[in-house]
Image 1 (cartoon, rainbow, N blue to C red):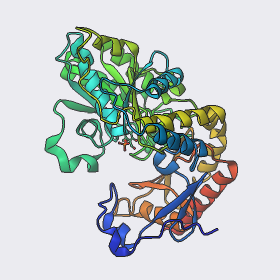
Image 2 (tube, protein in one colour):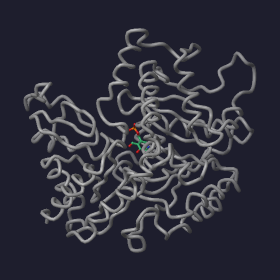
Image 3 (cartoon, rainbow, N blue to C red):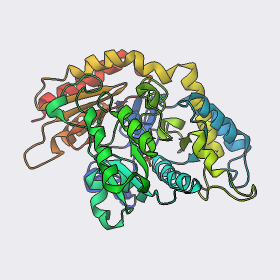
Length: 445
Ligand SMILES: Cc1ncc(COP(=O)(O)O)c(C=O)c1O
């Protein structure tokens, strides 16, 4: 079969699209164009099959080209392509919220819909401030993020985020009053940990220091990713998240888990909160919610947070926030079909069963040239490479390019190669991914 179903654009046709988070000139000189996807694979414009070791962008958890999702989307488009959710409603938005509440961590049964992870984060930050205000603590407006955190690209998410390249151009436009916890990546203590690192729980106590500096009465919320993905897979040390929870409770500070990548089965439970047995007050999600098929995000809130807003005259809007496409009917249809697949194929827990195989496979890369760390949890892994002198990121970028040429799509961030395959992955795919990556690392000086 000819896999090229969309003709590849000519070089000159690539100029108008200003690509996100991309080295545009490098890409356009040597484009990597994907034109079809099915199961674990993409096909390129020149007809090559490429195994997807990153679930698109950590989102296609049920694998590509799922018939059930396509059919649900087509059906919804033919029945009602759009309906507003401002002062109006449509049934499947409520159905989806109920389905999500049923798999959520305990008590997180109120759901606010968005269209992306960035929107979920900014929504959760606004809800935090609104919650405190509704309780008469309107001076609680500060946020505490974390170094190396990634919370999307809105002004709120950028401000609480801790990745320098995402911040430095926009420095003077950050939200005021934001501070950051130290990150927890320390390979001098934790290199080649299998699963969660043992060292580093004490880093959570830095929150007490920030509370002492700013006073708890000024702080609305702490936001962290249970596992940071974009910064190159940073795992929480054993006990770290529980300690954050304790300190937040002590000072009446909300805890937000950004589960945009860890949500929907990535770590062997529906959410990392459940895997780590730490329940936040707010949880931001997107990506796996709709299997990447239609953009969608959701913020889960503890009922007490939601209920704090439900005061005043009943005809008055309680939260002045929302998006034209919050709970878009087509996205709701895609998400419901996705949840059905997750349930039928038990994908929200499959990563737990596969994780020992995955862990052994990725740790086989220990000892390869320039490999200075391998980290893993659930169906996530990172291989960190020694940076080339004076050229940070260059070695890993070469590895990324060569893997793609050899039929494996990985993700590069700094000198880290990150892996987060669709949760339908089979053992043979794991072998192929790790063998190709190992070979490429061996060949890349
Ligand atoms: C933890 C986290 N939060 C937020 C986002 C932003 O999501 P989006 O790109 O959908 O806005 C991402 C994206 O990778 C993420 O990993």
